[in-house]
Image 1 (cartoon, rainbow, N blue to C red):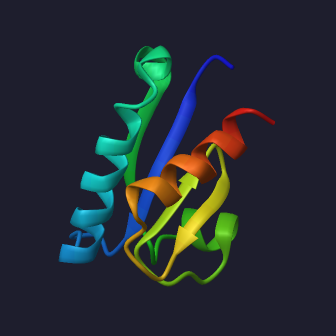
Image 2 (image 1 turned 30 degrees about the horizontal axis):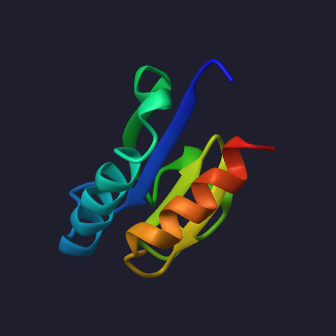
Length: 91
């Protein structure tokens, strides 16, 4: 796997739940030092055409890894993110 693209998805100006999700995501990624140089994290506006065409209507905060939606509608725990991240990157 060359690159791992991780998107946090929420309002254009991230809300407190989106910020907490990003913080949990960054903490979780510390458990995967072997991927540090391969991971790219970015934020997508939940109402953008790109998000709507790719994922449909979502509830924020949402997280996608390599185009696979792993969370939406609540702030995920670090453990939940870790388990779902592992599932996506080991497929």
